[in-house]
Image 1 (spheres, helix red, strand yellow):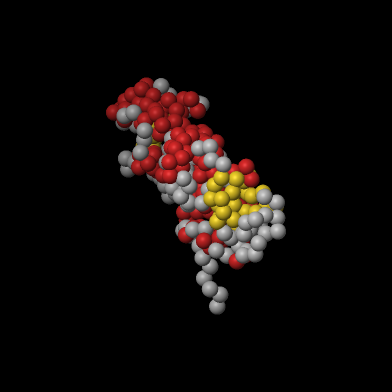
Image 2 (tube, rainbow, N blue to C red):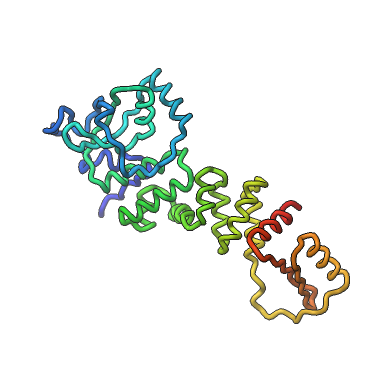
Length: 296
């Protein structure tokens, strides 16, 4: 029986401690031994082309740079040997950026040997573990692991130590309209908001509700209720035929139509059950109607 495979989500040790990514003999192109810790010139370390994170908080980087000036680098970054005195970052880009900002000439490094796929997996998993990573960045990282490392969602969930449903929910975010993805990236809406909006098929309606979430600071529960109401389908069984509206119901219909400034239809069957249908001619009108309804 094969031993159970370690989940990468528990840390990078599953790769970094592997004999496939570590050697103990001296490298003929330099003075450092791969697998050891060494202080390397910043000028010899190039960026990681597989880095999935694009946005770094400049204020946080400045604070880290100030801490590095005072305390130094506590946790070494990890690099791989590329050739004669050339190294490429595997993980620790934030520390590398802050060290450059602090004016350091050298930085302590773990030196490893890794191929491109191992580099990609290490960089992605290392970033997924960051608490500051937003939901969209995690979704992109998951998708890259699936596409570029040729993993199934089940294999990915095992690699990162997450439930498959969690992985699926993140990946579904990438199917949302661009406006919603930007809102997730900029932390204007939460993962909970996004998961509720995924259940709406119409893109214009998704965007309209997004605007109301932002302007009215709607909670996740409020958005879930809106989505439930929008997704309610007419009963599949045959309804009793509609009857003429009583005068008081007709007065209510006219009142609603007047306040919303749009066509409103009310149907009523013999058992007193029915539907209200509010019509709109454009996205702008829909947004106005939703804003009016949600303000009440």
